[in-house]
Image (cartoon, rainbow, N blue to C red; front, side, top):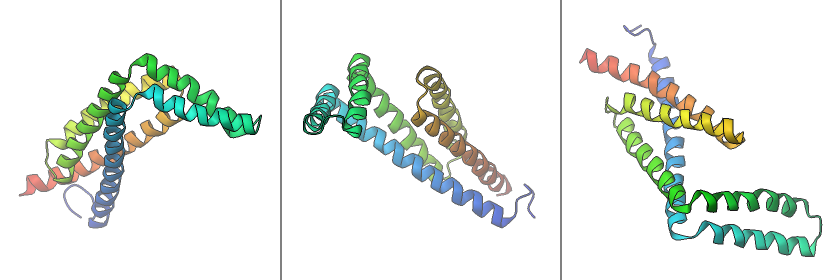
Length: 170
């Protein structure tokens, strides 16, 4: 048993969970960058209206279609909200959020000590904002994302303790 009270197996488990949580977070961050870029290039209203037209054609062919009806009830207001919120704001928000997290993830994967506390602070700020979004919108997607972010933060903290211990032993 080493000085920080973890067995080699426990350290290995932490490292595995840390890696996979960071890998998934990286994939989500990359998706944010892609979507943010697309929002800058393609007007949100055009995309929303395109899919709404498809759903409306489906309703003409099959009135009362469950999927088309619910799609219109969800996408219609969402498109209006996105246009109202401003495509540029959404694009900049997604791009900056994604790029910051990718930068931090690279630091974490390189075991750079600065990246661990910095990631915890930045993710903590994102989680705080997500709590606000949950209170305002009650979005199940944001709830799931927030829970995942808290799990990622837990494994960043655990991995940081292990990495820091070995840095101090050197």
